[in-house]
Length: 319
Length: 308
Image (tube, rainbow over all chains, first blue to last red; front, side):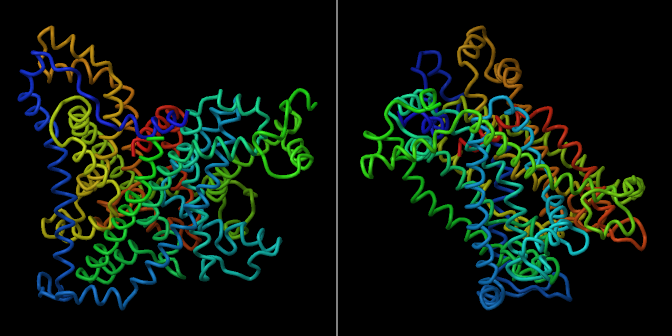
């Protein structure tokens, strides 16, 4: 009973079990491997050249100092760039990034779940609803940022007046104040990605067999009990996958704060700080150091997820 | 009412604790009459639609305003005008950005499908050692923070002389790094669903592995290819960090970068009107694609994610 949604979450990813070898296929063995190598080579070469090599190069750049005035002039700096990062904006940017990640991902989960449940029970409007929730997802992030900026800009937008009427943030320039600016940033991200979360969770809901609910109904379970005891536990694998995706995405957020607030008023995040040092201040070494640190943060979090949540999924699958 | 919708026994097996009467009272409250349930459902559906579409309405509304209306915060334009659209479509820099985006997004999509489908076929069908490790590496690339690649590429592209290359050509290869993992996931899962027997029949008939791939698998995977192409196109049309790190002039800028740095095309007026018009113009093609291909897109999004 528990295996159905889990199988859909992990099953298809498991490598195919090779069919029994016949004399024909075994003679293919070597040529099959060679073909695989040929087919994989272009992708792997690209990934190696434009992903792996640059990251190694970033580490090298972060260990050097580059002259702002004389192009091409550089000297070895050891860990000085990292020291500058740690005594500069790194900790604040890390804090902002974590606040943003925790707040936006948890709001998206709650809202996405509510949306998924509504979409799951709405039979006639489902097609329209699906198209509707895809619209925020399809909106270019730069446009999302501009839209929400114009909604909260004093004079231009309607939100400040509307919220002041119900007593929230009177006399506040929303994008000009710490905390408030972050909440607009979170709201914009929730708008853009809660629908995506909803679609992932809807896919999870759709594989829960109907007869489980039927049995519970016969046993007299209420709507709430059915939700807490059946839907949620069976949805855990889908929720975990969605959480991992969204968390790793939120940690590297760049587009939204770059356009919405330019990182001002307590919204500077790791990627944006690295970008600013690199292109605006032309500090290649410091920018590279901050990029490497951003990379490290994302890798640590994905390692923690795999360590604790990945095992969780596997043990669930075994039940 | 309760006979129709309330289960036979309310307490007992499921809730053991608590006074039975309390449980029954609560369960009666939860099991609402059908019209009320339907009403609540439609209410939540309406809430979702408003939440998702209102900001879109707002940007369209802003794009139709001009002059003093732009700083009124009004929920509808008093005197709707297409002036912002006219001026943005006469803006040379914006048109260049549209051209560059079209070139970058289309080239990225074609190359990604071409290169990615080879890799996906190998991963889905062929037997070779360390397949899982390879898939894991491809997967982990897609979680890399873009800045960690953009920063060194900023230096590399400057050294190689392709920084700020015309038509945004310097953006295509960096885009591929993130679009390839996406393509490979989606296509691997689609290729796996194609019945192996069809390929084996072709092999028995004397087709080579390559012919089997191009003549049998590729056509059968058409829906998967469309899905992957759509998602890659969306990604490339949306890409922002490479676009602003590796370009600096309108000759090379793509749409998201151009919009972010837009200063307006109507003199002495708040730029938000023309920026909104530009935003609407670049949003339209994507919204049309979403409406036409919604099923394919959802299939791709959930396939890519569920595979995670």
